[in-house]
Length: 227
Image (cartoon, rainbow, N blue to C red):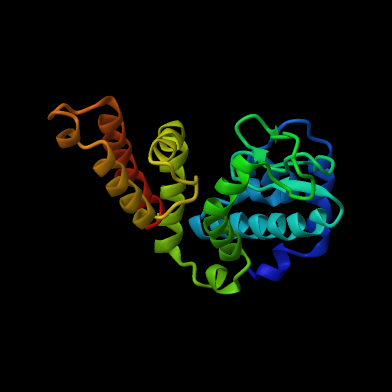
């Protein structure tokens, strides 16, 4: 199936029309069923991957279009939501856990983020862009085959099943949600040195145990998801 057949402008309009009617974040699967009625009959891993790829590309393209209208589109396979940006002078950081913007006053005005979220935004941006441009590259659609499509979908279900564990683990290791295994290793080493029992009279603190648990969880999930 050609990517251009799944990403025509008509599909963009369908996505926008559907999201404008939603008051709560929606799952990617809900969007797929509403935008592509034939998706319900797709069973092969390649077909499912291709539809997933197409809808994610359309979402990221629509995200850029809506930004010019001062509308934010949050793109996440479990929490897709469209809403107006706050007025100037208030923090534009979107808090996906609660589905709204930070909204803290910004002093002096002129910036888009409060001091706290300006720091975290700089840390998260490279990984966010990496995910976005994965779906904007045709080669990542064309390269799919039965083996890597199966691996991708298996990893997705693994992440869905352990999603709460995954989120707690990345937060414990002070990581963005979209992180690589190398980032996990780097932050684990940094935090392990900080909380190592040798610095606490040989006693393993709760922080040290928590970061070890988080590292074990991410070691299990991330390689499977990115296989």
